[in-house]
Length: 40
Image (cartoon, rainbow, N blue to C red):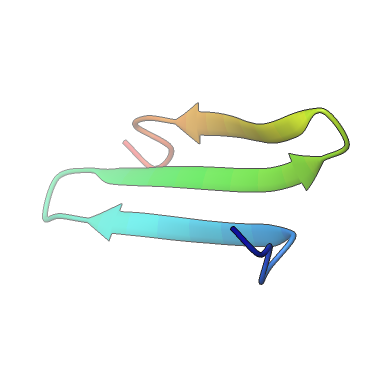
């Protein structure tokens, strides 16, 4: 599979919460970090 993007992010926005996911490709494979309740 060909790597198209090294950095990507997504946001799930609701009335009472926001969830953010950030993914950054590294030499050993993808790394992800979630920040649930970022703007509670």
